[in-house]
Length: 406
Image (cartoon, rainbow, N blue to C red; front, top):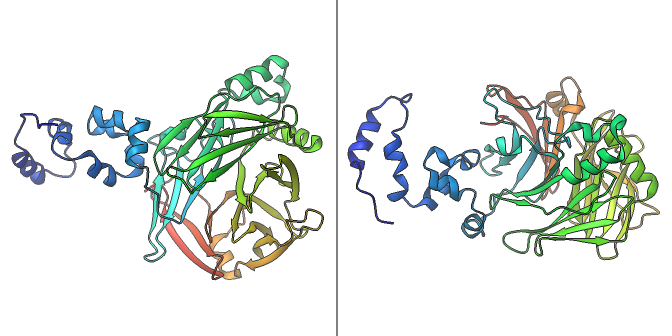
């Protein structure tokens, strides 16, 4: 594109260099910047949470930030450097209830990034696009979300057949890829009267990542959305009747909680959900649902997040002496599965991280051989958040503090 005849950029740059920091940018200069500087250079430097506000530069760039084909072509091979960890603040409810929100309206949903060599902690804020989303799980940088527009659709006293029908019809499902920055709006799945259990499988062998959304319930069957075909497939397997009824009742009265921990391990999909009693296991090849006990017998508190590394399934628990990181040594044989101790957080580190032991404030996430334990999230930008990084390979612990949402 040929540059438009406009003001002299050198003169403008000199003027801007002499300005004080609190002077607003010249809209004429910055509005024409795209004619002089390649968009790709700017896109690589724009902070993630500003990427979807490119209207601040010019309308054309803002349009491209929402152009799926442009984004997939431009970011096809790009991957956010590992390790990164999802902080689902405000996204755990089917009806949107952001609880980490700054005065400027920015919702504190995003990813914590850690440079292992420099130990620099960063933040990828997802901000406003996620203020109206709920019921999330994140796998390999792909975030599944769903929501219904009204909490009335989930309230037990109002669960008439008409309300259940409206809830199913109004349900919105999306998958957001933080690598390509593309939002995939899923077509409607078949209607079900129950609130489905949802997990996600991600194919990291292709670029951009492919994914399948697995949706299980007790009344209809198992529905699978495949990003390659952009369509749902209905399979006959159903959740065990007792588990399906308990989960549906738990979510409808507790209050509308629908956050899932989802991970793929040895070809099986594991979903930790809601009541914390069982982990659901789905075998896609055989279309079979089974269960795994979610807690150790001595566990006082079990967290929803689960992870896998080297073919082993990991889960964190609160026990009397701290947080135990455990794995199931015999999960391949459902008749003998047991959670066994892998490591335990040192007492002094527990005291530093959990000073008042309110474990409802704990967020955990897994990435490769790393586990992030984040405590006491705050929406105050001048407050520091404590986090601990655990390395499964070396069994080592590191503590960090950073400003959430910087």
